[in-house]
Length: 377
Image (cartoon, rainbow, N blue to C red):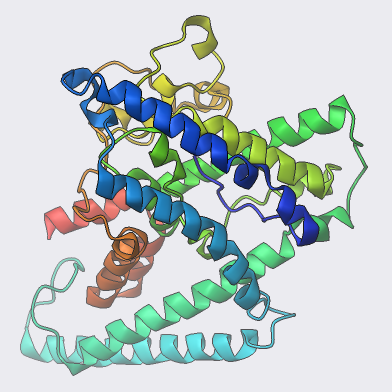
């Protein structure tokens, strides 16, 4: 269950956010699931579905933070958008200065290494020896350049492709009838599929999404374990639907419908559903998505429809018992650690790298590439 970069409702529309209005239903259904699972606590088939107090508290905390974060994000993002934000130019200047400092320090470090080692290494790897002053300066400046430049870039991206802005440039108005709603709901689901897939295939996007996958349990409360750092991503814009003629208010409603649908697929209590499995996302399909089993990794990204996965080659049916969590689990219930662990790991990799191709790869290539580099180092 993911919002993947949607804009939240503005003004009075926020009071009608269906995902917030559904809060009582979340607690009722979680209570029912909890009692059902508790009655089967001795059945190993449902071990991963059992509620664990600390895990559930972390899930609910993340749910609250995911509602508050977009409101805070809008307050600073508008100041960092190129062309409109008053802090965009100073931030870009800081990023540029940090980049220049990193490049200069890299040059000094390389010269020092050449003087110390007659034969240059065959390839660049994450530094393992204790870094000198130049290496530390280069690494710190590189982290600053990527962090500051990235915030400006993502703020500008979100501002330029916001649904209200693109609505003013629309090609046509599809209206509020069947055509308009079909375009809104199906269009949202298609864009959601690609955004969800990209969050598994690029590490800086994975850093946003990984909190949702970090629980080693699988029950309805995990659906509420929502990331809070959507503002740090570059998503395929849902605003494109407005440019094609879908009204922004209908895009918002489609977001809510999509997220509400995804709530019920986070459960061990529902078995396979026969013919319904053919085109629709189901608990069975989504259990696969949350699996750390090798054959399940980066599969079944669909929100409402599993058709996209079958169409674009990312579908995997549920077979072996699913092992939930990450390939390297966090072993913490701290919301702050859950939110920022991957960002800390990215910053550490960038800091320890001695060249910009590696630094950018640690940010933009898939998380699997980074993990392989660590194993090879």
